[in-house]
Length: 222
Image (cartoon, rainbow, N blue to C red; front, side, top):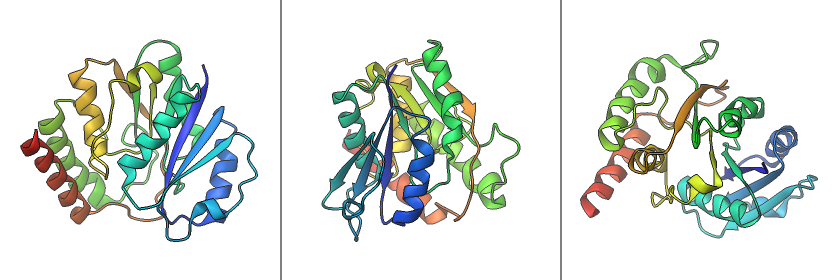
């Protein structure tokens, strides 16, 4: 089953990204990098990886939009399993086999990574005990799906499931849209433990409020 990794990037360090992609190429058949309007276009840099396609949004549209662009491209070019993985190095490519095995074994249509199921992860205290627990509750209210790790950027799903997962949330609220669509379409899902490395704190309280605003606005519009 052809596996394609979709990597959304925005203002990433090219050398650091190149190192990450060189590690990633050993775990997938193809890589699709989507440069979401970086100030210094990633497309100006050469990545010596034969199985890599580089797409670009001229304007910054958001991570959700970048993932949808990459997913559509991957399916058009024969992907049977799509893996979403952030390009900042927080998620390690070594997680991919355990992420896609349930799909290959027909146990799941989509698999979510969970840093909380791997007890060796060192997670910032405020994220672990304040931000994420609150996010779990909000996520369940809006999606109806119980996950231990909401807004984890590492997931995998089948090409057939992708038809039922069209993302309309262009920015970070897309991570809540996926479980909502999984619940709505009764897709088989699992969570698996994944290792994470925090070089930066990542999303904080202010980002959480932005996501909540996006979700509420979407509910009102619908």
